[in-house]
Amino acid sequence: MDYFQLFGLSSDFELDTHKLSELYQALQKSVHPDRFAHASAQEQAMAVQKSAMINDAYQILKNPLQRAEYLLKLRGTEMPSEQSSFRDTGFLMQQMELREMIAEVKFSDDPEGAYAEAEQTLDNQYQALFSQLKQQLAENDSEVNTLACDNLRKLKFYQKLHLELERLEEQIFED
Image (cartoon, rainbow, N blue to C red):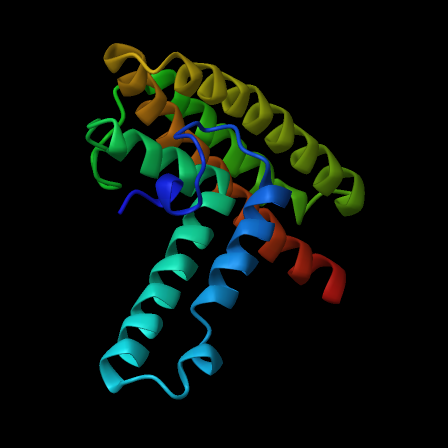
C-alpha cells in the first residue's frame, strides 16, 4: 500500500508533519496489540504486521529526504545507487572544499568561530538545494524528477558533511 494513502494524504512532498503525527497515533491506536488481546492468533499477527507497516510509513514520511526518495520511486523515477558517480564536477569540487573547511576547523585559532562559520555555510547551501528540490517535486514532470534525484543525492552529501561537523564538534568541545 502507498504510504500516503495509508495516512489518507495526497502524494505531495509538502505535508503537515503535525497532522501526520496525529494520523500516525490514531492508526497505531487502531492496531495496538491490546485491542487484539482476545482475537485469534491470525488477527493478532495481522495487527503486528499493520503496526510495523504504519511505523515504516511514518518514519519515511516524516523525514523530508526519505519522503522525497519515496515520492520519486512512486513516480517511477529510478534513484541512482549511492556509489554511482556524479556528472556534476563543480558539485564534487565544492564538496572537497567543504571537507577541507571542516578539517581546518580543528586547527583554527578560533575553533568555535570556524565551527559556526562552517555550520552556517553548510546550512545555507543545504537550504538552497532543498528549496530547489521542493520546487522540482511540486512540478512532477519526468525530466524534472530526474533532476530532483540528483539534488536529493547532493542533499545526502550535505547530511554526511553535517555529521562530520557534529563529530568534530564533539572532539573540539570535549577537550
